[in-house]
Each structure stands twice: as C-alpha cells, then as structure tokens.
Image 1 (cartoon, rainbow, N blue to C red):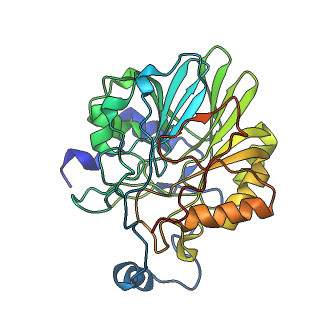
Image 2: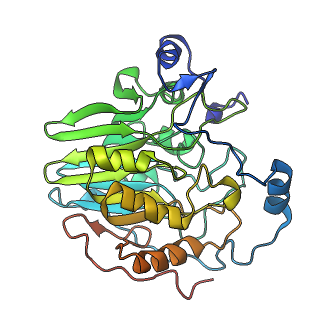
Length: 347
C-alpha cells in the first residue's frame, strides 16, 4: 500500500475544502440518492463466487481487436475530432483545444501486475503518441480511469487538469504542479478559455484506490463551446441526475455514456444497457458514443455484448450510436458519419 500507484489521501487545505462540500457527509462523499454497492438480492459472497468461478465464453476476445493507429500529432489544427482508445479513454480536439479524458494506456487496469490486462489490439496507443494536452479531465480515481503509469508519463504534456475534489492529492503526489490542478465539486463552472466552458456535474458512483472509499469525488462533465454541447459521462448508475442535467444544460449534440462492465448486481453504480438509452433520452442527446467496453474484462458478460445490445436498443429507440473502432476518428462536424459493426464476427 506504500507504492506510489496507490496515490495519496486528501489532507490539509484540500481536506478542509472537502469537509465544506454539501456532498460530503458522515465522513464520505455521498450520491444524490441512496446507492448500495450491491442491488437487492445479491451478496458479496455470491458476486465474488460468480466472478471467480463462473466461466463466461468469450469474456475475453480470442483474437486481436481491430483498431486504427491515427497520427494524433499530425492532425490538422482545424479538425474537430474525437478518438476513442477503448474502455473510457478518449481524445478530443475541438476548436483548437486538445482534451484527454481518463487515459489508461499502461496495459492493465489494476494495481496488481498481470491482472485486468488489456485485450489484444486494444492498447495500441501510448502516451508518446499524444500531442501536447491543453486539458486533462479525470472523472474519478478508480484504476481503470486514473492510471498511475499513464498519468506520470503524460506529466510534461499536460497544461491543466480538471478533476473532482480530493483527486488532486494523487496528481500532486505524482509530481503535477498544484497550480495546474483544478478540483471541483458538482455544479461548478470552469471557464477554460473564451467561450469554452466546462461544468462539473453529478454521477452515481463511488471512489477509492485503497481500503478507504469515497474520500474523493466522482464527476461527469458538460463541455460547451459556440454551437456545441457535449456530455462526458464518466461512470454512473442510472438516476435522476441525468434528467436534471438535461434540463439545465441540454439538449446535447453528443453524450458519451458508459455501457459495459455492468451486472444486475451492481446496477446502482453502473448502468445497464436499457438504462443507458434512458439516460440519453433524459439528457436530450442527439447522438451517443458508448464507452467502458472493449478493453478490460471487469464483468461476467461477453466482451462484445455491450456494443451488440446497445446497438439493438438504439435502433429500437431511434437513437443514433457512434461505434468507432479504437483509434478511428469521429468527425465532430459530421456526427451522422457511418460506422461499421466491427465487433460482429469476432470471438
């Protein structure tokens, strides 16, 4: 637990600010609604047994996933694009700004070496492939969203970090300058540049990198610039905050929502596919980019189930999905561009 990858708990002035948050009560950050770790009818023992001993065919792909290596350093400065790196990591170049969200590029999503390994073909990008980053957004401090090795390697490239209250303690411990870190509570507004605004919004989840849980805050984000509104969802179970955000900031051109590593047992902290569709409706999103899949096996479903199920539900509900391969550019000026069902036929 003394290794650097576990991070550092908030202390001093950082902890003092946390104690003043209306979302911090009884020694922990709290969700807006009561949020048990497990849904009714499930026990930790039964869930662990399923995770350890129930064999799911195709939980991990048997062949390398198709992907595309785009040269990010040679993108036209006028291009408005998004590239997904698998799971919940993605890069956005928008109106000349470069944004990186929850990058995990070290090959695994666990503090224990050799566990929770990235699928073959899903980990083709490294920090060396990235250009200078204007803004690094961190939704929360779980290992599959805040990766010590990646964050450390990116240190010289990142100008500014925006994260939830307390998360800055990890970053500062890993060598980031305090003046480049902005920590925020829910419903704060951060002016990134002229007419380029970020709102920090709620999610229904939890946090923690060691035995202490919920000592840092989890976020979603609303990104606004002239003529565009994007919702960047982080991890979240379904709840009323989606409709509240939709009423306050919507409609959205694009919502990036988690869809994968779900289970009925933990539906309060990770949305099920039909709930992802409802969240998009609540947000008044025109298009949806599903993330949190296709890189790590964290739940007992086939690796391709999230994309296959959500695509079917999207068609039934007339909700367009963007389903790029890892590394395939998404043209943010043409969200109606077609994408293949690249996961079909792979096992």
